[in-house]
Image 1: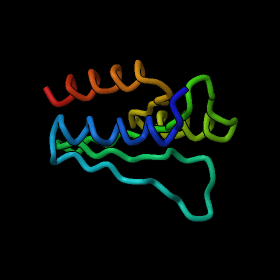
Image 2 (image 1 turned 90 degrees about the horizontal axis):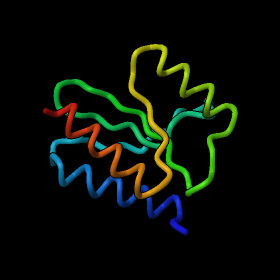
Image 3 (image 1 turned 60 degrees about the vertical axis):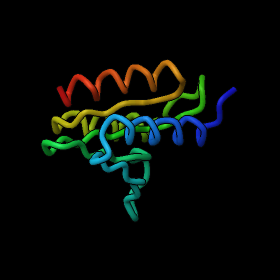
Image 4 (image 1 turned 45 degrees about the vertical axis):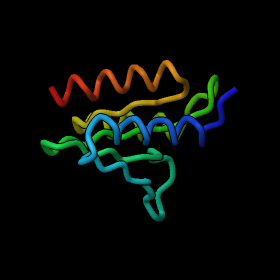
Length: 98
């Protein structure tokens, strides 16, 4: 079984291969819980919020709430919890970048 840290490293590595200009930031909001693990900034002023989980693990209630809160503002959010999810996310990023 993959650890969350392994999924995170693979995601970061693959994003940097797609385009070295992509910024992959560890996302922390002081005094606020439940926000995503990574903020990914793509060329063209595109912000993606990613929550990382181990395979089979689901977001906590507060994380699900934050996901909806950010999504309602028009930002793209994703939960990445497996190799397949990384592949799907990479396909999405490639499509967005054209």
